[in-house]
Amino acid sequence: MPPTPSLSSQNLPAFEFKSSVITVPVLNIYTTDVNVLSLQLREKVKQAPEFFKNSSVLVDLQKVQDQDLNLSLLINAIHNVEILPIGICGGSEAHKKLAHQIQLPSFTPPRASAGKPAAEKALETPITTNPEPVEPPSNTLISQPVRSGQRIYAKGDLTITSHVSAGAEVIAEGNIHIYGALRGRALAGVLGDKKARIFCTDLQAELISIAGNYRISEDIADSYKKIPVQIYLNEQALIIKNT
Image (cartoon, rainbow, N blue to C red; front, side, top):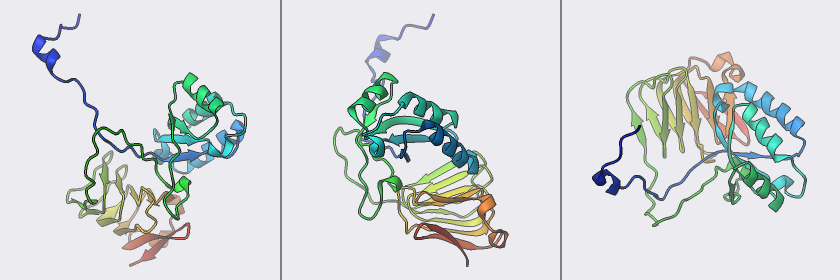
């Protein structure tokens, strides 16, 4: 039998609501054919299984809001590729009712910033209590190696003066600078900044990504590996250039 909390511990706060911003990728649905969706999802996940595994997504139904959709089958198809839907946005009242029946919340569709389609914009869901002053993005400096299994997130630019091991992940809302070997995954401009860049002195990455556009190791030419490079977007193409 668990111990009974003392009177003093009962009077202490057990939780607290605070203003926050949660960012997750958005999965836009363009067809109600769940078989087609399931097949294409599997093919996409095969390209970078560790990148997608256990990733949270918001399911956007705006493009199919006037169509009948078996939402339960769709959510099962997403779960089957080890992606975790946290809720839906858009869709009809019927879709929202179905989501409620399977215990999925319904969110307001995210608005795209000027020049950015919604598919490239991460969801921002504030839980408002008292508004807090907005601070400018900070720059993060990491001087130790980033080990396998570690994940580093920077709200501004991220600079790493050592190496990034295979199985590690470094993520930044701005640019990423790595003054060592990049053997893991590097994701720059994760909130949709298409001007973000990745710089590294030794490219051996499992995955590189800018504003949601990515390449996996197999898609990186050998001529760019183990040399200093910079990586940037041109239109929707991910460009790797010797430095």
